[in-house]
Image 1 (cartoon, rainbow, N blue to C red):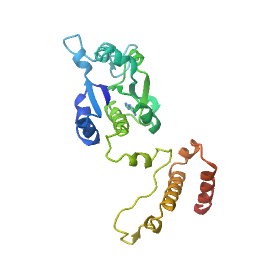
Image 2 (image 1 turned 120 degrees about the vertical axis):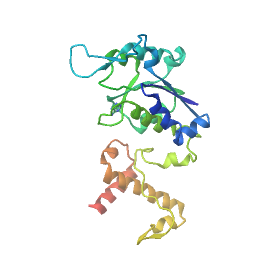
Image 3 (image 1 turned 30 degrees about the vertical axis):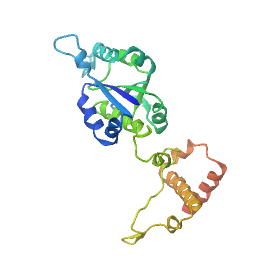
Image 4 (image 1 turned 120 degrees about the horizontal axis):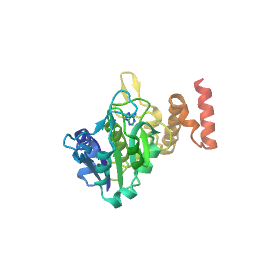
Length: 245
Ligand code: ADE
C-alpha cells in the first residue's frame, strides 16, 4: 500500500482525479491511498489567511509558512521522518520515469502544492526534493502532483491490470516504444507488418527492439545519449542510421 499525502489549498482538484481513473481503481483495491491536507484549515487567525505580500516589495503574494508547517505537522511524526517530501515547482529537478521508479519503492510520499506567486522560502526546508514536471509554469502544483501520483501509482503491483505492459512501454528501458497494431490486417491501404504475423517470437522481439531504437533515434536522440548501449545495439543503430539517411 502506497499512501500519497497532498498538502494543497485545493483538495478537490486532487480528489476529482484520483477518485476516478486507474488511480481510483488502485484505491478501491487498497493498493493506493490519497490523503489531502488543506493549509487553510490550519490557519490560526480568523480570516484564514494563507498568503501575504512579499518582504522587500513586488507584485503578487507569497504563501505563509505557518499554515503549511501546521498542515505538514498534522501528519504522524514517524511517517514524516521517513518519507520523500516533494515540493512541486518549476525550479525543481525534471521529473523522469527513473524518479517515478525510485518513488514507487516508498510506502508514503508527501507533496507540497503551491499557488499564487510562490512559497515563503522557509517552507522549502520541509521538502526532501523539489520536482518540476516540465519547463512551463502552471497556476498551481496540483496538476504537477497528479502527474507524479499517476506515474508512480501505476507502477504499484496490482494497480494496472496487466503488469507485462509496464515492462514493455516507453521509457522503462530508456527507449521509446515502437509501433503497435491490432486487427484488421489491412486498413485503408495500411497493412500490419508481415513479421508481426509470422508467429516467430524471437524475430518479433528482435524487430520490436530495433523499432524502439529507431523511433528513439528519430524522435529523442537525447535519450540515446544518456544510455549505456550494448555493442549490439550500437551496431543496430549505425545500420539504421545508414538506412534512414
Ligand atoms: N508548479 C507550477 N509550475 C510547475 C511545474 N512546471 N512543475 C511542477 N510544479 C509546478
